[in-house]
Image (cartoon, rainbow, N blue to C red; front, side, top):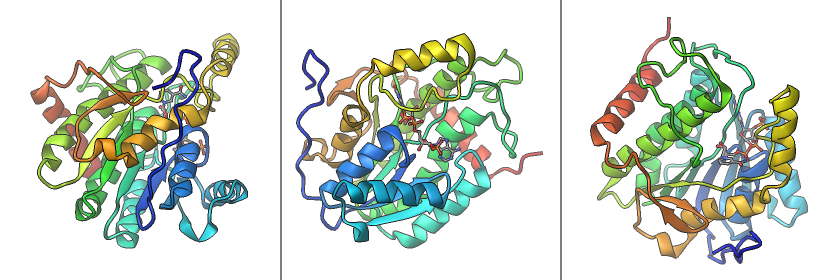
Length: 294
Ligand SMILES: NC(=O)c1ccc[n+]([C@@H]2O[C@H](COP(=O)([O-])OP(=O)(O)OC[C@H]3O[C@@H](n4cnc5c(N)ncnc54)[C@H](OP(=O)(O)O)[C@@H]3O)[C@@H](O)[C@H]2O)c1
């Protein structure tokens, strides 16, 4: 749907009045644009930020662009902290007994290996585990609305070692750690698609393309400089957000689940057929969600 110059397709026009949406990572980049599009089409959107101040500032920006303030809500959590994500999920579940759209978008690309307070590698905790906590704890609300879950994945995916998710045995490398989280997003989404089959709720994974956002902002040195310059040549956040919004709202996707999409077109996914590995990873994540960490 995007033309050869990489322009975004025509914005979607769907009446989302009365629909409830939650967008994580809504304070910047792709998530902020997705929140804007959903609000523009009439949805009531909860913008999830790292802090309430950041989320409120994003709301102010959307209102300045023409969004209706009364339809925008805020919530906050450090998505790298498991207890904070659990509390966020419980808060959102209490606010939304039914939820039409859950957009798991927040993501990070750290410059060095950092363990969270819970002992998880930071990109794993943020890009994968937080999606799993929110999906697990909000699934009843999404099912009640026969709603849609969207995971933001990437074609930058691979390097997953289910026995070394926190990189204690392997030499940590930022891009490999990031790729692991994005492989996991897809593997886990395929399990969710099976689990949600027959409920009316769906889940799909979006690849936004290469997008000029803050995602490489923490990279330093020569590589950091190169990454930032390279990102400047990429598509706009609005263009990147298009496929997320399309998956979340387009009638074309009604009832469709378990697909990986870029530019409103389905891509193949090499992990779709690895059902038992996907199931094992899903079980491992469910344990990580619940288990106390030493
Ligand atoms: N840009 C690309 O080329 C590209 C390509 C493929 C996939 N993606 C994916 O697209 C998604 C959005 O990324 P983006 O490119 O829009 O980058 P971005 O501009 O850096 O946005 C990331 C968002 O996630 C939030 N976030 C990160 N860590 C968080 C934490 N611990 N707690 C709460 N919020 C947190 C950020 O909040 P703060 O601003 O407070 O950090 C920000 O709102 C990510 O999942 C990314 O992997 C991006």
